[in-house]
Image 1 (spheres, rainbow, N blue to C red):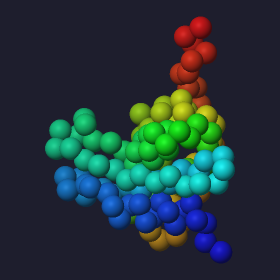
Image 2 (cartoon, helix red, strand yellow):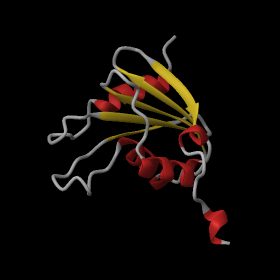
Image 3 (spheres, helix red, strand yellow):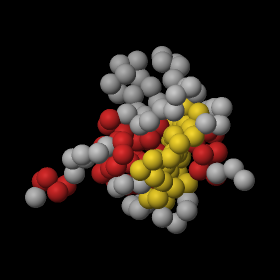
Image 4 (cartoon, rainbow, N blue to C red):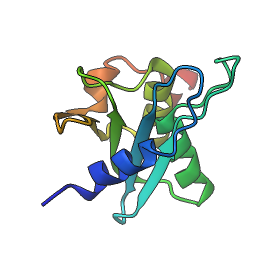
Length: 129
């Protein structure tokens, strides 16, 4: 049986707007109730205004009032599995905590890790107290 979260990330990747890099990414975020929120990367020619798939999925879920998450899947067409970039890791930590992160490519290769493994010494609200 296929993982619905991974399937949703693969499907979201098809909606990516990546005319400059041609690097399409899809993400699917599962909330505490089991609902899935998807996102894809959306590029700007300035690149600095580009939004990654992971942040699109998180911001979409938060805009719907969701605040608790279980896991995220990230899909890209690469040989090596593609982890979230630094800013996405920080946003995931800020809004999702130490969730499970599943990386997948189009050939069916996948790996799951905890966010803490990708962001071992995160900056968070504890430093602001």
